[in-house]
Amino acid sequence: MSDSKPTSNTSAPHEDAKTQTTCGGCELLCEDLPVRSIKSGTGCTAADKWFGHGDPLPQTTIDGKEVFLNDAIHEAAARLLSAQRPLLTGLASTTLDAIQIACRIADCIDASVDANDYENLILTAPTAIRVGRVSADLEELRDRADLVIFWGVDPSMKSTRFIERFIKPEPHNGNRHTISVGMTPAVTPSSYNLHFPVPEEQHVSLARLVNAHLAQKEASVSSPDGLDDIAHQLHQFIDAARCVGFVSTQPAETTGLVKWSLSKLIQSLAHQKPCFEIPLNQRASSEGGNLAGAGAVCTWHFGSSGAIPRASSSGSMFLPAEADAQHLIKRDEVDCIFIVGRIPLQIKGFLAEDSGSKTVIHITDESNDTSFKNSIRLACASLSASTKGSMLRSDGRLITLRPFETACLPSMQNILDKLLDRLAVHTRNEGST
Image (tube, rainbow, N blue to C red; front, side):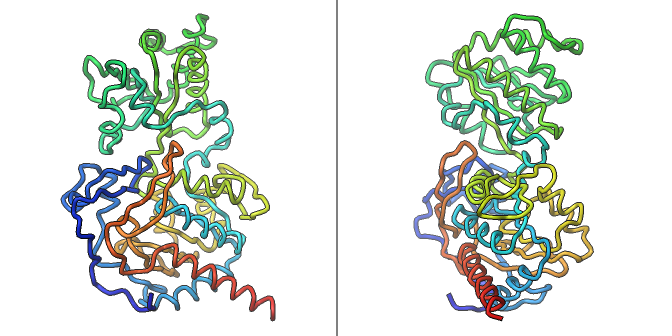
């Protein structure tokens, strides 16, 4: 592709307007969205955000001034190499191949690496809350679970297609009942959909009480008024079910106790009947659905999913709640932030408040993203409409993106390749000197 400034030409859609495409807007990675409905709205908030941007095309800039792409790549390489404490972040909105190249760049410049996975904010995570976790894929929840328990799940799930795709279809053997544990029901209450309004601070106690009922012994801790009755009712529904699926999400607390206590409950129940957990990462929906892929690639390259203080292909340290992106930026421990893809909401606020002391290098397909002082923006092809590659669904299933527009700009992978080559040239030149 020739090195020219972005133009206002729009991308041309494929002729077949009935083609289905994949949405990378959240971890569900839905593969069945018809292209013809993209412009008019899909009915899913995450999908509409994912496909919502378009014209004008993003511009490649250095410190707010439009430049040629090769010039911006050259300057980005120079700033990355001159940085004392670079950080690689973002990653959730791009493909596995692009993430692999980004990790090679991080290794080259000794960068910190974190994709803003909630679990890396927890001191005991992911080790403690994943030990013994019994999980399954989303289709198994849809086809087998005749009882689904939403454990503290944010009702904003209603704006995604999770309920439509995996809860509304009847299981193979009979009807499905749901129970929402939390202050707001995940599913509209009815005779088949119950709601127990339990605040998050009581979720640990409730899990322990239900576990005690399963073991037919007295609970070892006192419970708030009415909580034991709720635990008894939950036990009755669980006892009557053939297969139980728990749907969980990230709680507000950061000790890991809520997730750990639920995992212990599911472990106990799994000895009696089919039971598993479907953990959802709802907070990642706005910046892309490949958070699981980012974690998998980082684990393969560096030995941990994130919170990596210094990238090294020979093995990196893992410091949750210490070397995650949010803490590093908040403590002003990085001087260059390399963002690949959509900017995570968790760090956008920190960047907006920064006075410009940090260099921000951003590979993006968005024209309306926040502008930062002392920054380089590398404009790439649309992640939602023109990107080829694969993402990893949260349950481990590989999902292939299906582009439906011809790209007018280089792909993110192409830009990362050129940046890595430029870094190698700089390194060789410095070595020869």
